[in-house]
Image 1: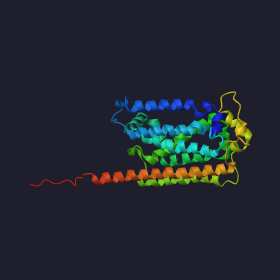
Image 2: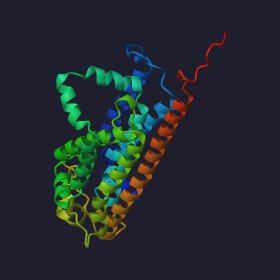
Image 3: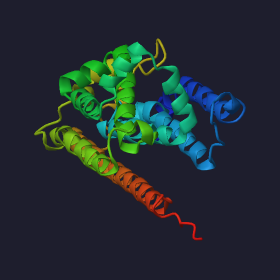
Image 4: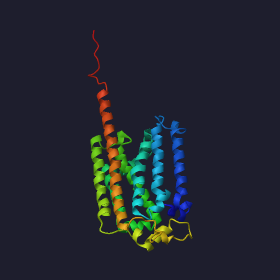
Length: 305
């Protein structure tokens, strides 16, 4: 690890522009839940746990899109897969858990017009969200697509934004942050989470059971140098000595590293989805207890003369 810090500078390692952007988002969030809260109808104080969730989401997104993991993800695919876990399987649900319901309701109400209602009627479908995220995620890991995007930083960034949006749609239906706008009953949500786990399995299996290392980004020094050049300041030379040879950063053979990446994705996905199933089951139990405890007309005591 010291090789990494000795080779690359502060900007390449820590992505300060992302730190500034996420700090601004964090500041806006704190203003929203404190000073600006009074501008929203029905606004209530935000629990400390929600604030913690949101800022943990910012940190997870930083680990997924920046931090030293960004550089190491260009050296070993297992680190790149860890980035994806942080960005799309940890950060997104934490954001949804951290945003207050009154803010989500206000955004949806503000954005509601004839055009947006028609658009969201399509993209807000659980089935669309299910196939959109898993399709984009699987397509991303097709070798030709992966190597092409890694060599085109603008397209790669756009793809990441679209994938983040798709993950929000998917997690919305799994977590149901606004129950009144949830199209899936609690037990169907559990089945929905299982469905997501099944659809992501082929991509993981492709990576794990491939007969050889598939990605030129990690096997071809020319492709790797082209990819790495976008991570460095303009004019900086690419440190080719860390790609191969005795000074190489990669401590696993390329195919083994690829297999580890696939296993990591499947294991972490199972853990996160397992927590999501527990969350959905807890919501269902809470709703059942609330309904059982409600006072109905037949339960009300009748007046006696």
